[in-house]
Length: 285
Image (cartoon, rainbow, N blue to C red; front, side):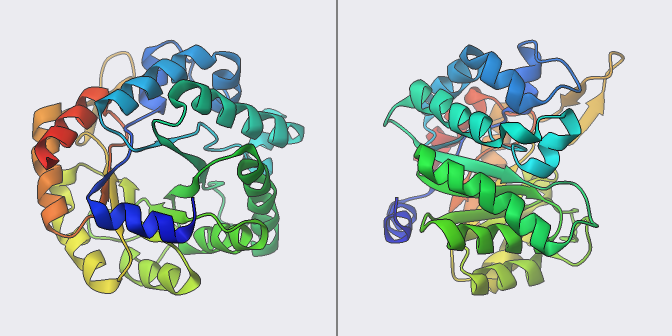
């Protein structure tokens, strides 16, 4: 997909992403604490079933399960030499699931570390993006980012190796502050100037808490705005599992408000399922 094709896709109508991956994989047996990328690579049928359901529910873009498949994060599991194998294999898992019925985004995320020099971040993301682009992803998504510097590294790295569209979402507090300092409003302006093709937020909180945040982001940028929130705020049950409070119908109703507030690209994060995407697709028709 070219950047122009991406702009035309978003201009045509509200673009629908997929919903949660991790919380659904855990329901299907993925153990806590494992490298999720390796687990999906070795158990592809679980993700393939989920992504087929997202596609059937109305998603136009699904995220390849390459979330933390960068050299820095994989080193936490002793898998830093598996960057190419995992990224290439996981793109193939998603392509086998949805074929040409959905676009596939190569997924990148934070290393979770504030002290990584920019040059090392850049090289880690450049390595991952080069494999993703060669493996045939349609676009890139930098998601669940905690600070603007790491997103800037993704944009720079992408520009160095390909011409794919780059969507960028950060995780914020309900007031718009970022976990690594600064705020989402200054961040999205910077990212647009650097060449991001869409900016916004994911994870964070439920959609009912994000109306003012979305309106303020919309006022700051001219590019598409992304919102991919959780199914409300979770509570932890007696088994240590996160239980999300917002049902699919309520989620969709709140998401419609965010579209009216200026969101162009929407989906769900933690706690959402294909039913949430189906409800969202129906309410946006």
